[in-house]
Image 1: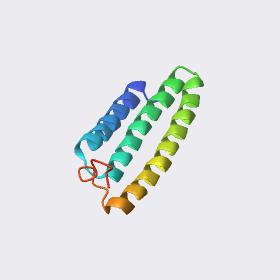
Image 2: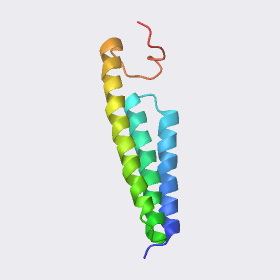
Image 3: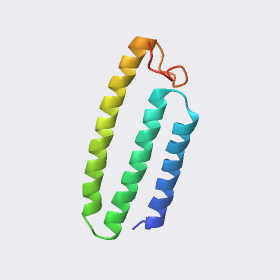
Length: 100
């Protein structure tokens, strides 16, 4: 069996990559992908600890995180399409205000 510390290290690396993507990138789609990477890092950790402690509640939490993640993608992409139609750009710096 793979030690939990390996999963912890992989999850930390994925989370840091996602956090850097959110902070450093200007494209809204890349920011959403980075948020998804951060959600997946948390899910990996929930599953690893659920398997290590022989507890099912970590896996149940993963389903809720996946539901929130899917909702975030649906609403976020709908907002991006609406903003792109209005501003002709999805660059975060150019779309700093929603004024016409």
